[in-house]
Length: 342
Image (cartoon, rainbow, N blue to C red; front, side, top):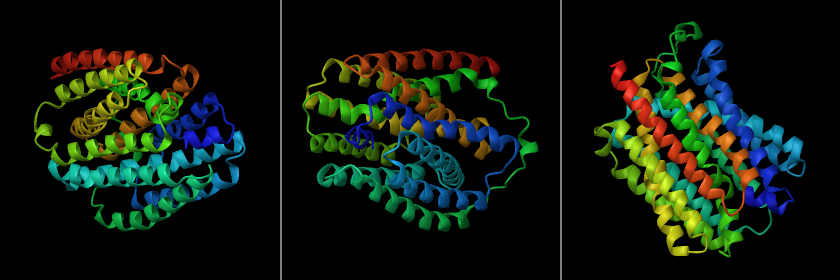
């Protein structure tokens, strides 16, 4: 979609602002649910309906910056409800080993659509038709998922003991790492094509990264039995190395494919270890997952998108690498504080 918007005469700053909207709503939602709502099957089903409506509105508003921004706010709010709901059910019902094997199907879907659109996309708005179709299928299968929900739904007043401050360094590290992904998620396609790599080859780069992600999700069960904090530190420093490679070798197809292979660690291993770690820290499971996605993909994704839009250029991934190193250092602070708290 970022590449699509450039084809509709959006600037890189416009793209950054547009794709900060949905993540920002994911960040706000956990605070609302903490005090006023519970993440029940009914609320989840409503969110799926609004997700589909949001994609349909996209097609009518994509030519207008402000109306399209509002549509993204609606879409982001809906996705911010549905993802934590599904993650919590999966973590509660599946072992760490089986969770990865289920989660990889999302990666297969991403890879399929990336390859397909990279090959056949002939005009910008065509991508929106596929987005709406996928939202419809998500709604249909999402309704089926609710029958597997056997987790108690606590009232907001029962969540009064939930605290972000106790583990502030962990949350700050998660936020910063996702900020560093802003250039990748929103401008990788633009960055590569600006350096002479074709759109079809770039789609293969995306898909190769997802293949490596799938491999990790399938076999990571044994790794997750180890110290999760050490895994998070390792994945964070690997992410910093990954962005540095993109900065140093922007024209190299080989190096870019190697950097994409690190997606297995910087996304698949990190994300699974992080949500598993949060699941073990808090008794309010669904609220914890909402904050995890809200702070990581929400606030981090929002700030990362805006930052990447403003700094886009030759130094984009150098700055992203520095941000990832900062996340690593703060995670080390969390590790020391956590040992003290225990």
